Length: 260
Ligand SMILES: Nc1nc2c(c(=O)[nH]1)N[C@H]1C(S)=C(S)[C@@H](COP(=O)(O)O)O[C@H]1N2
Ligand SMILES: [Mo]
Image (cartoon, rainbow, N blue to C red):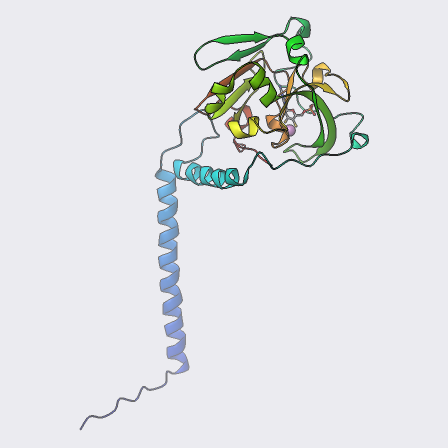
């Protein structure tokens, strides 16, 4: 005859031992996993030098994935909020001056914008030619990654109008636009959809007056879908490419996309 096995209830001590065992095992497994994960990351190669701040490859892959998610949300129909002119700051803050330092001589009258096509062909464009194009104004909240923002009023030519006028449409099939100061000391890389966004301007005026030197005379970028760091002052050259152009603050570890 089979005897039915009766499960004896555990004593308190047995219960405690059992819990200790479970939590210790769980701890060991998790710790090993964490250590393994850290070793894996630590041993993974660095991303290609130059463009961004030097993260491990798997981390950069994750960051790029995040960027793609955000870029999916991005649409040229989505406009940054604008304000009435009366709300614009009368004294526009001057933030930083890499590539446009006051102690270095610069003659805005002698300036020409250099546009380098991927074919190697270069256009040299004067401010007069740019000012002859339809003028677009914008009053928006300019945001700096350092934590300040200010409603400001700018005017210039829409980047997309500029592209049309100078017959650069084939260049916009490429993924990126690069812009640099004439002395090449400050430079930004922009994804093409953001550059071609209808609120992106090549600006030559602030508060209805020609730009002063400290705001990037004679021509600066105003790109409201990005943080201040991408709004390059004193554009010297514009390039087009499928590789990410170099970017001053991305090299220092800031987000390459820097979208809002
Ligand atoms: N050439 C150049 N452009 C630049 C910078 C710079 O240092 N040099 N700083 C950027 C940053 S961080 C910000 S917030 C804005 C500030 O523009 P503003 O000085 O006209 O307010 O310019 C951007 N463009
Ligand atoms: Mo900034």
